[in-house]
Amino acid sequence: MRRECAEAAYKMIRSGMTIGLGGGRTIQYLIEFINMGNLENIKVVTPSMATALACKSHGITVVPTWLTSSLDIAFDGCDQVDASLNAQKTAGAIHTQERIVAAMAKEYVVLVDSSKLVQKLTFEYPVAVEVILEAFSFVKAKLEQMGAQVAWRTGTGKDGGVMTDQGNPILDAAFSSVQDPAALNESISSIPGVVDTSLFVDVVTRAVVAQPDGSVQIIDRP
Image 1 (spheres, rainbow, N blue to C red):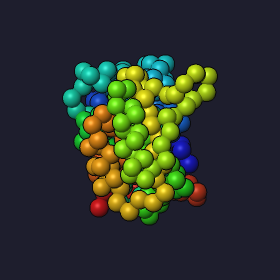
Image 2 (spheres, rainbow, N blue to C red):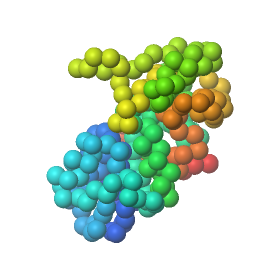
Image 3 (cartoon, one colour):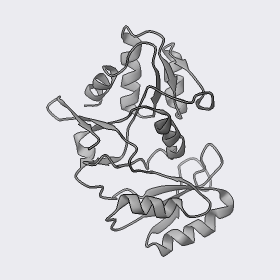
């Protein structure tokens, strides 16, 4: 299903475009389609080192994000997306950079299989909150006051918790019930010291959803 998603995404790209690419296996397939296709002068902006290295190996030009002010279109995956195209992007811990790429793009497209499409976000995944180090305990306490179970994200092969490329810790805030994702995102973002959250509200413009039968469903923002 990932390959079908990538093929549908490839058809949205035109020669001469500067595009944003996130991370994950579907994006790797998309890179392969770009490499094998007949598009010319494609440039890529990405927050993912793995994606950047894959582009380089296929001879696709990678442009630093900080040298870019706009993108024709951007593609990424997500953990879950709902019918209103609200999305959670918890897993990769690069959501701040991904949001910057999304904001640059005229269109921001998520590529998912049908298991990740829900009517309303379930919040089975915690909200990842990037914070500056000085605000770590303060933000953690504020999130707990909001009803979340909060933990500093840990990884394998490293002593201590996960830090972003910018040197900021990631707090995973698990909420048992959320009625209004937009309000929650606004409340968390307003806490001093919060850099960004993994809740993408009013950001995604289109979802490409691969179905088990091999077909692809396109959902545009209502």
